[in-house]
Image 1 (cartoon, helix red, strand yellow):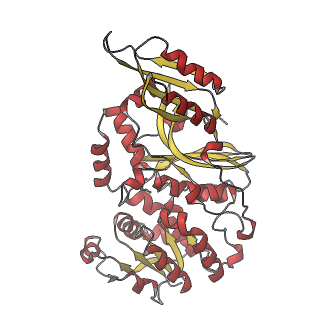
Image 2 (cartoon, protein in one colour; image 1 turned 90 degrees about the vertical axis):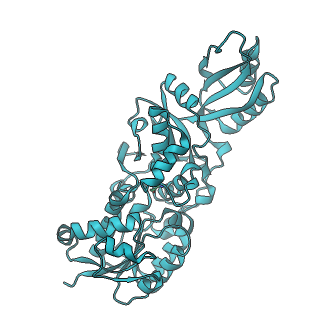
Length: 438
Ligand code: HSE
């Protein structure tokens, strides 16, 4: 059988890794796919990059539409990233009857509903394993391996850059900006690193996981998103004293009233495996009604780990090239006409426990005023730390409280009242706490 010809859009970190893995493992890949897979055409703005990757024998263009419109190309592999022109390229490839493999989480999270509808209409596949958690086959696990289950909730460390920053701050006391610069140099960070540190990248990935877990359309815009920029070294240390690690988590949970879809720094008991996932590694905990908790761990970014997922998708597409479209695994795990319109809940409607840190005047009665407000809001306290002031005449002192589970709306009201107290200086820092037990 003739080899399948693929076109690569982009020869950056992931594009380079994909070309390298396809070449190095060509024989093994052909044995798995049932036929050879060759990169026939690639688009890159830096023509020298193809030579650097040892690809001087293939066709190269600076215009990605040349690849998308080429009649010899059966599978377009989009590794440019970002919303545009990736969207136009992918839609054009589908229009031309080509299958698409992409690592582009922003594209799938924001335009996935439109792209999948178009792919369905044209009878082609759009595969996107590499869009979430790099090399971890979490899409395949959720969509196929756990297909028997009702997924109850999932929680994941799904941004390697953010996890790397939090780990280095905790273990080495390094500065935020310094660690971020290293993540950029290592090729982990997004082109715009605010996507990593403000939680947007994690929100893209979470909205994809949530759709596949619960059979709902992609709704990135409804994801509650909070990044790691406000986490201080003091919070990391206080959390540790209380027996927790702070991780930036994406959490999706099905409740009776709707779906929680939220990304924020989260305190997790140190005894949980996921609390000990450090550096650029990713991990996703998925709780299914039949299987119980399952944990998926691996490299969430980087050239070859991400290429591992891209190439697996290419092999998958090659294997089913001749399958009827109706008999393929649906893009969002559930049949397109069976997606539900379960609402995504506003953050005020969720229930969780909270860590609160506040700076208070070092005087009698402060604690009584704070606890009175919490009691009025029916918020019970699980743990409490008050640090001894640095000197007996220090004017301010840190107070740290851990609450039991409470509705976020009620907690907002209490925090507003605490911040209005004359004895409290500045804003109350809040970190949500999850036990991730059931
Ligand atoms: N910037 C992303 C991360 C790359 O750090 O996880 C992988 O999606």
